[in-house]
Length: 338
Image (tube, rainbow, N blue to C red; front, side):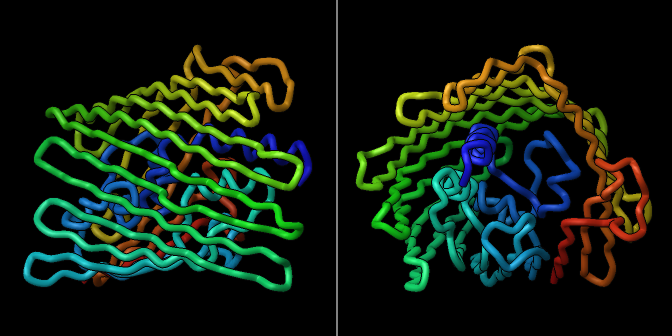
């Protein structure tokens, strides 16, 4: 990996202070929305499993670990008040980015198991692989827990084991990574706070290179009506690599909507940008600071519902401005609720 790509990957790490996701197409369309309950937010808040129907879900994408989007899918079941499920192919945003810095193997074929009762849920993720042809190997173990009350939600993630190795005996350790989230709903308002800390180390025979990450986030969202939301947040991310830092601060503002146009079709859209105080300072690359550089982003999506099936997609026009029949919907997914 060349230096420029490494810097871009490092910048991505600073922006993953909150890797919480809904179905990929839906989260792309609902920028800034807090408390979204969907088939992928159970990874950040396992307690959400009790707010969902029983389901089978599939996210379409590439078969490679670096694919964007990447293929994955799973199910959730219920019996006698207990929930359980399994999911294949879901990657940790932290591990994906940490390992990308030095080209270590990502999580191959991860398996997630879910279980929950009453208002709590738990999740365990395990991945292990060894490629004797390339010399790449890795092991990853992650645990998650979530509790959902009437107006309060708590969630925690602990990445306990994250080891990787590549040709030449170069080794990587990327644990522990800790993340805690608190969300509170007060009438039309939703508040969320997040704290994250991670550390890692690579050893290529020429000395250790230490990695440390700190992420902080606070957001507020107002829903004046059920279909429309708007709000603002404040985020801080710091990646320390061998004593040099990449620091990013941002004050994002956002406006979005999600509404059923017909009983069988949902329309989503949002706009988001930084406001005044955003800054990126990159000692790793040795570049000058950038302040409030343009990043206005419009995202749009469609969801189609029929006979228990939901098909979601991101409208390519959101970023291209064109209604292109050859590439109309991207990041597609299918969910069957039963």
